[in-house]
Image 1: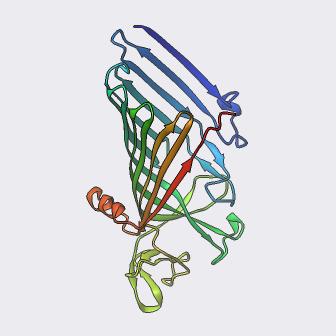
Image 2 (image 1 turned 45 degrees about the horizontal axis):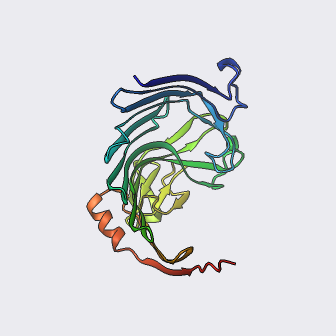
Image 3 (image 1 turned 180 degrees about the vertical axis):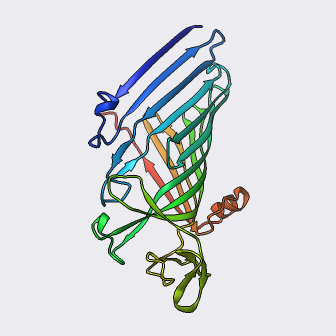
Amino acid sequence: FHNWSHDVLETGVGSLSNWGDAHLRGVFQARGEVELLNYWELNGSVGYSPESVSRTLTRGGPVMVDPATVRSSFRFQSDRRNWFNVGPRIEYNRATRGDWSEFSVDAEMEVRPSSGLQLEIEPELSLERNPHQYVGETGALGYAPTFGTRYLFGDLDRTEFSMETRLDWAFSPHLTLQLFAQPLISAGSYRSYRQLTRPGTYRFDVFEEGTFEDAAATCVGGRTCEAPDGTRHVDFDGDGTADYSFGDRDFNVRSLIGNAVLRWEYRPGSPIFFVWQRQQSEEAALGDFSFGRDVGAMFGAPSDDRFIIKVDYWLGL
C-alpha cells in the first residue's frame, strides 16, 4: 500500500436510546480507503441512518416516520497518471421496513490522448423503489386522525440514466474549445396507492386495485381504479363510488443541456468568446423506461438555442 485510511463517523446522535422523535436526520458511517502500489485506489463505506421523523414527506402536513436505512457503496479508481483511467462506483441503500430501496452505478472515465485534449464521461444508472412517494392530499370525507385531511402516497418505481460529458481541446495557446453536455432520461411508474392512517407513524391504509366502470365512476372489486383516460379514482369508504380523483402520475422526462465555448485570443490579453447554449426537454406520461425510444425522443424534443459573442480588449494603460 502507498497509504490507507479509515474512520467511523457519528453524526447528530448522542445515542440510539435518546434518538427520539425530535431527531430529524442523522447517520452512523464507517469508511475506508487505500491506494495500492500500482496507484489504483479502493474505497468503500457502510452507514446506518436510524429511524427518524420527517416534516417533508407529507409536504407540510403532519410529521411522519422516515424508516431507518442501511447504506453501502464501493468504488475503485485506476491510475490517474495514465492517458486513460476509469473509476466505477456502485451504491445500494435499503430501508429496514417499507420496502424502500435505491441502487445506482456510475463510472468516471477520463481520456487524455495528448496534452491539449481531454475528454471526461460519467454515465450513471439509478433504480429506486419508493413505497411512500407523496401523491396528494384531500379533505374529501374528512379524516380526523390526520386533522381532517387525507394524505395519499404511491408505490413508485423509478429508473434514471444520465451521462455528463466534458471536452477540453487546446488547438494552440491562443485557441481553445470547451464542450459540456448532460443528457438525462427518467421514467416513473406507480403500482399501488395508500393513505397515512396516523401522524407520527409509518402506518398506511393500502387501497386494493379494482376495475373501473363508467357508471358514476365506480370501482368494482377494489377501492381504487384507473379510467381509460388515465384518471385515478379512489373510494375511501368502500361504497363503490369514487370520493377523490386525480390525474395519472406516471411520468417520463427527457432532457439535454449543452454548452460550447470557443475562445480565441486574437491579441495578447484580448480574447473573443463564441458561446452556444442548447436546452431540450420533453415530458410524457408513459411510465416505462425504454432507452432507445427515450433517447430518440430526447433529441427530437423542442430546443432553446442561444448564441453569445463576448469581446475583450486589453487597453494596456
